[in-house]
Length: 418
Image 1: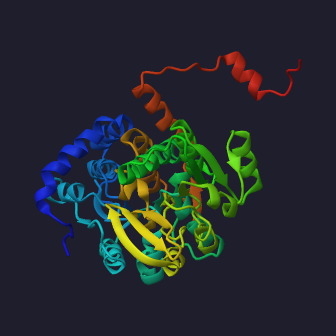
Image 2: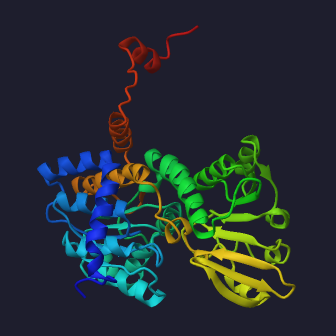
């Protein structure tokens, strides 16, 4: 296939929305301007597996401006914005393989389409593209210069591959950049998750018990935003350090089996499987709402919920009602997939600005350092992280202090005392 999208006639609307997002992405715009002059990615073929959103479109156009040939597929069956996909194909000449609501077979067929283009660099969000490349195309994997991974879930999978010695090319963990996870994960996931829940349900959060499973950067963001909306927030954790941090931050902390009896809203952001399962469904109150903002749809055990149910129906767009034998109703949002993308529009452009600037600059870094990188997972180079932060501050009109020569000498010496 040359491309696979839902409806080419949506291209005009997609372009307008891409342009709207671009207004709030000054860092990526700055990178694009330099790329346009220097062409650091000239002749490089890039396969990208990302959420097909307006922000992703601006990353793709930046890479293309740098000289790259880009092929894009979706990293989640429900995250594609069909008008954006249409605009990229029809107006910007980017081959896209993504249709919102595609089934699992189509999803993997699309992954194979971009792999078949024999990429030099791969960009992933969840590691499905990279793992498929390793599993089914080992010869092609051996010729890849390197790749980038956008999410915590994907980085965990890729580090496991590196530890097992099966990783065939270097990876830059974009997720681990401070200008990514401290802002994208916390502020982006926090706001967009609440946005998705509100769009899907129109329920009042104030006065409710709001359960957040997992207190990583994403969980912190969701918990903070829910508290800001007036909820009593309960955090569930398996890590004692994170649980202690959540309590010191002012949240209730308890096991999920206890939280399940209290919660009105539940959001999973752990990256693990079966976080909410049968024993939790059995004690939930009537009307409990469950959503997931972790990358994959495994955090909620939907099979167990279905087994407990006597009726299942879609009651609102992106809201499924499961009626249990005793008459209680439990509601699952967005089929247990990413609620912030399936029921809303994903992260605001201003935070994706930094995440995708890291992606673009990391692609340039891989090309320039192709002969020195080993087959392992790297953090984003500190100079890239600092440059993204500097550009963001400049775009916000914020200036900061600089160390004096005396301060530099003081910090680098062991001889100064009290």
